[in-house]
Length: 329
Image 1 (cartoon, helix red, strand yellow):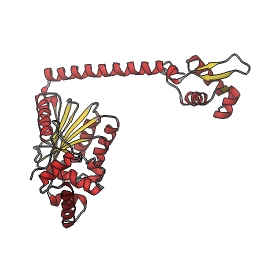
Image 2 (cartoon, one colour; image 1 turned 45 degrees about the horizontal axis):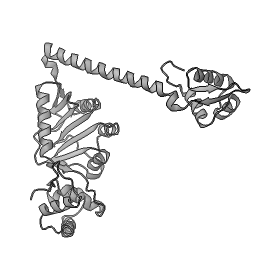
Image 3 (cartoon, helix red, strand yellow; image 1 turned 30 degrees about the horizontal axis):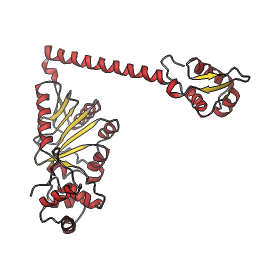
Image 4 (cartoon, helix red, strand yellow; image 1 turned 90 degrees about the horizontal axis):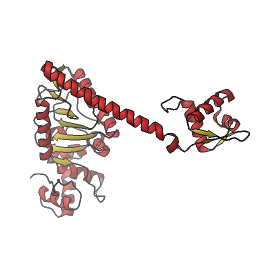
């Protein structure tokens, strides 16, 4: 068995068999299908590594030591190694930052041109996230967003926080179920603003990506920004937009149907009625009928009242100070 406590696949298979049930070498050979000589070598390694104990009986019986004891040392060593790598990474990042600032400020900025190159660079930037990805989503797009970005899906699965600010006009171009709801279900936090000034991706406060011209699709050029005053300013801008935004979340009231839940969620963002109808795949007349029924159930005469009363019932998100965030109008 390797010195660092790792188990080879064969050693792990034998250890698992012994966790299930202690046994003799002959019994283990029958259960694992390993040749006697190979099994004997594996058992010697497991005993020497403190994973298994051997009795003095004839024939000898082998018993697995409790996993929390047998693997506890290896887990502790791995945690210490990981912490050492983190400290080294932080140290080298700081050395790199000082070196760049002291010798070549131009290295703080990188221009990337062409849609495919920008997409690859955006993937690389996001995949480097360890704590949080912040982004502002704004049209135009090289391709309409129809599904959740696979990098976001992977990172959310690893516990990386995602906070997104969506431009209201851009929100209308996303697919509701396969993109927006998919991200929200996995833990993305989203807010909507009437008019975002630019697109951006910010990762861990250590790197950012912005288009050189937000008025053209992503096939143009983008700027990668490393730690400097510009990156700090982008972070401040994002937080300002985040505070201003209306939360985008699916209402939690179980009394609502899926369509009505989606309708109310989009209504609270301030999205126009015709755009909501399009997102829901409803004719405008059908949408108006469902909205009227929903407002009647809430006893509301206006969209504003509907938002207030839905918040009171716990159907829509509330701001940090506890006030409901109904749509304007």
